[in-house]
Image (cartoon, rainbow, N blue to C red; front, side, top):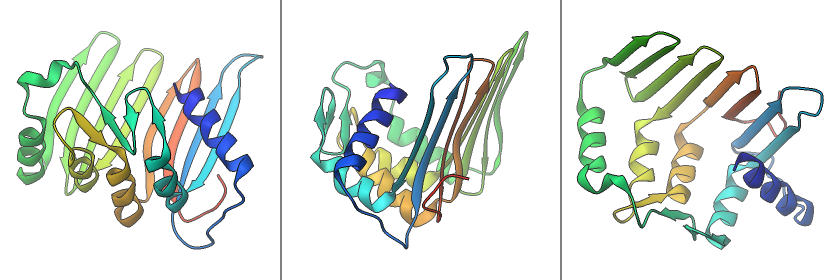
Amino acid sequence: MIRSVCAAGLALLLGVSLAWADGKWLHIRVDEGGEDGERVRVNLPLELVSEILPLVEADEFHRGKVRFDHTDFDEVDVRGILAAVRDAEDGEYITVEGAGENVKIRKQGNLLSIDVDEDDEKVRIRVRMEVLDALISGQENELDIAAAIGVLGEKAHGDLVTVESDRESVRIWIDDKNEAD
């Protein structure tokens, strides 16, 4: 899926010659391991992402929103849970330590952190509560990607997701540079 999203983004950029000197940029870097491993670099101004998202109609993705028609979340009040977490004290909420896998979920200020360490893979997710609020601001069983991107442009800076494994490396981050570091 990451390859499809990256390929679509690159194809759009080839046909569009737009760049904003000011503002924040979304960066995606994917490096697959091995001799035939692919390298993908995507650097997009968030303003361009915000303009393009409402124009995309594909599968469950419609006008900047992802719809889940059949989901296991019917019995879970995701909005209520996020509101409770947002308003709760800071702390390490969940720690699971097992043979070959450790998981930590914690809240620090307005930042929700999820760390997963497996034998051969490390995943780090950092997301601001405002972004989660925007993500679920749509209708039930819907994620509003466009709204989340808007909040990212206002509030976020730095790494959002990192994945390190023997098979691949993925980094998604936001900064003020128009090229990856």
